[in-house]
Length: 114
Length: 112
Image (cartoon, rainbow over all chains, first blue to last red; front, side):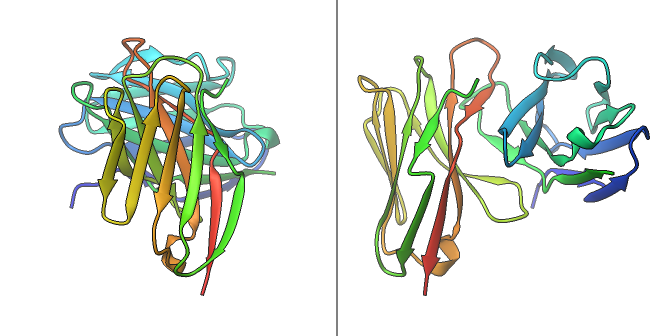
């Protein structure tokens, strides 16, 4: 049963600390997406990779956020330094660039910055 | 900005009743997809309708698409308490980037 995995599932940290979230996309998928979900803003696209190359990170605050795919099995999203307004659920999703572009979501990382 | 907006924002019904959710979008699309999100979970793909299709069925789900009105509806028939979740429409926009634009979601509560 192939699925997207994310770690950690929950993270509580203090303002100013670095936060790293990890995602393992479904094997064979060549697109990876990072989303942030809050009550106020809903689901926002932060970054998008295709074949490990970043294609669109226009939704990501560049001064503190960074996203990478060191290899095809790992995507990371880092926040440094973290701020209370970064508190949200961060989702990773993967899919195929070919075809109908369905996305498969991970369970999310619930981040709380105090 | 978000492409899709769901209507209503929240819907409360009894088990056995039908639930209808609507989605409006702004630009041309390749396809439109509906996702479900249970509380505390990630989104799960439910059904996809291509831009050249007008109606599609999957089990108790029925999706319609009207590209002239830039709108879609999701009908859940004979609802169950387990259908309680948020439902999102997502549009696959022909930008070449293969990314989806998600709507604001409808929160559905099905009471036993």
